[in-house]
Picture: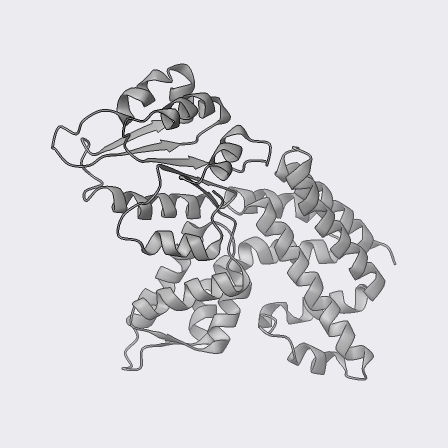
Length: 344
């Protein structure tokens, strides 16, 4: 069955894993790996025990699917429970899994990692249609989900985060869960090492720790698109992909940027000046980017902004329905949006 956010939360909070198997897939591979780690702990007590944890890769099983059948029915030499983990799974293992799930013999739980799967995927269909199987889509967190993760992580470190710091982090961090976690861990260590007794994360702390890294990826990309700098788009997009940023995350960052430009235009149309309108943005524009943002407000008309947002929305639809590589679709869309910026 397809697990929505509430059921996923219930699954993660259960002391024991309650399904025959779980398929975790999607563009956020860091989140996929984190969920598999959390669910594995519910199956076995020691993940470092080679007799309790058996791992395969999709290519391994494609060449010899029988080894999976042997593994899920084997007895643990240590006498405890076992779990089978399949990484980089492909549709080629669907028939083998269907055979395993059709048997009445008790099999060890199976946790499966996969990249993005279309609705036509045999694996995805199987896990969504059977009630004793769990299908969990892992998309890059943003908005309230990202805010909750940051606040929860900071709280676990014994720190309190200011609203300004939280807003800055939510606007600066996106992409693979493991990359986001590393940045927040770095920030927490920085704040815990401060000499004062007040264990608080301020906006200045967030900018000092995360500002430089965020500026080198998504910020450079969205401002290159907004400036219509097609030569720089290719370079910054390639760098973003190498840093683990997913095409979906890149497109959504563009959408947020252009929505903010639209927001400023709306306030200016009501009689406010540019500085007043910029002051209403939450989170505020990073101070190093304020002049660039103001220039883009002047260059982009509301009609052109609407067209850019339509192109971004169409990209997300195409990436889910056409089967074309998401990276290619993303690059093409950003170039089309940049062309609009160059037209005066």
